[in-house]
Amino acid sequence: MPMSNEEAQWFSQAFRHIVSNVGQAVLGKETVVRYAVTAMLAEGHILLEDAPGTGKTQLARALAATVAGTNKRIQFTPDLLPTDVTGVTVYDQRRGDFEFRPGPVFANIVLADEINRASPKTQSALLEVMEEGQVTVDGVTRKVGRPFMVIATQNPIEQAGTYRLPEAQLDRFLMKTSIGYPDRGSTVEILSGAAVKNRAALVNAIIPAEKVAEMADLGTTVHVADSVLDYIAALAQETRETKETRIGVSVRGALAMTRTAKVWAAAAARAYVTCDDVKELALPVWTHRLIIDPEAEFSGTTAASIIERVLNEVPVPAIGMG
Image: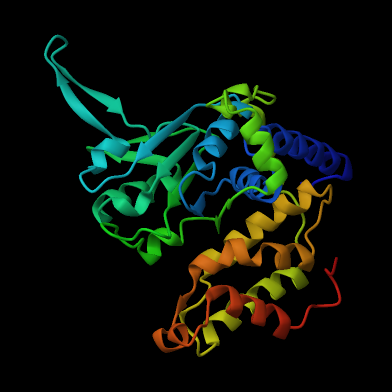
């Protein structure tokens, strides 16, 4: 059943309250917080490529605290094993039976810190749970619950001892963005509260995890006109056909845009998606999905510049404009 205008108004109000609450811990970064909340409600994951000390951990903790959920932090290192992420089955001598000890991935918000420092084998331990919300260990499949979101980080400055994320893993992330350093006013506010080491601890729960799952279900009922779907398909196709890319936006990427745009529209109190929603989300949803031709990359072409050019070249349909 399509979302009603009343439901859109309620969704938008709840969305704003969540963003405002998380913003108490991540000062001056409303756009990034909106991206993170959108990813959570679209039941996706977000990759933060950022320098150390920009508040990535605070974002994960504040988001988990806001939705009365659990959060776990995994520090990815070269010696980290897949079972350190998913969990392991051990033999209990007292009971005479095998017991599953869940890994840190069994939480509502999981911070995968410096994910590119672990080996590809360990990175791949997240593939199943990020796509299907479940973990299979020793042939037994276990659900991780809802909401479930991975906030992964990687440091773009220091590349020694890191492993580049494979394309299949990058495609699992709904969005990629960066927090960046706060402006001067926000920095002064942070410094004035220097005695508080963990700002996320000041964040109170304002919505139960079950209600977040309901919001996620409600977000899927936002209407997307055929003209908007055709616009998304045309943009994705153009990124694949340009000579500057080896791999463009996949069908999964187009689906990710549709899911994200629905939540983005509902957050604006609309029960329908516009082409402007797609334009606003194109960079965070699609830049990490492009594989640029080496010659084009050497000449200075970036994924962002390709997407911006595609947005300018592909005509916007008359119906579905914001």
